[in-house]
Picture 1 (cartoon, rainbow over the protein chains, first blue to last red):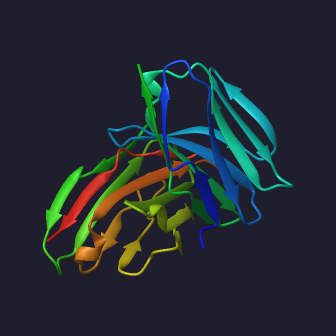
Picture 2 (tube, chains in turn red, green):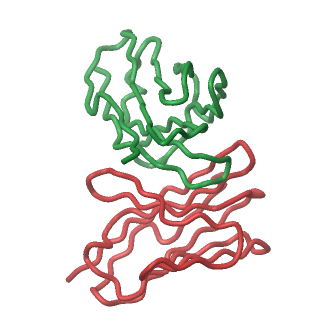
Picture 3 (cartoon, chains in turn purple, red):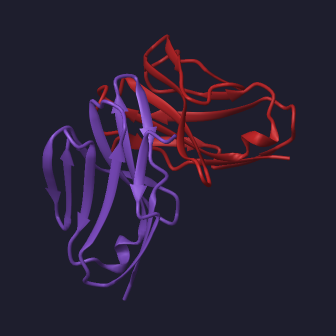
Length: 107
Length: 112
C-alpha cells in the first residue's frame, strides 16, 4: 500500500489549458511538498505546504489536512510545463513520495 | 552561488565492487539525504543525516552506508554492488526538518 497516491499518472493537455494534479496521503504529516522533475532529470522543489494555499506565478498548491489531500494547479499551461510532478509528504523523520504525474503540454 | 553537486554523474561498475558516490553542498545545510529513483517506485529514501556524525537509515538502506564527517559532504557507499542497485541516485539538502529540499543533478549508476 502506498502512503502517497497521485492522480492522474499521465496527463496530456493543450497549451493554455488549466491543469490539476491530485495527491492523497494516508499518514499524518508535518508538511507536504510538490516537486518538479524535468526531462533532463533535475528535481526542483515547487512548494512546501502545511496548511492552506500557496501561489507562485501560474502555479497554485492547496492542501486540505482534514481530507489528507493536496492539489497542484497550473493556469494557462505552456509546453515548458511538461515535466513529472511529484508529491511528497514529511511525517516527522520519514518521507513518502508519490510515483509522479507525467504532464505533457502540447503547443 | 550556493549549490549541491554530485559526482560522478555516470558510473558503470561490476557486481561485487565497492562504489562511492559523492555529494557536496555549499548551502551550509544541516540536513542531507540520499534517494534512489527507479521506474515504478518513484523516489525512495536510502539514508539521511541531520548533522555531523549523525546518520539514519531510510526505507531502502540495505547494502548502502553513509558517513557525515563535515557539514558539506555526505558520501554514499555501496559496499558490494549488486545489479539491483542499478538506479539513478539523488542527493538533497535542507536547512530544517520540514523545509524545502534542494536536489543535486543525480548520478546514474549501472551495475553489470
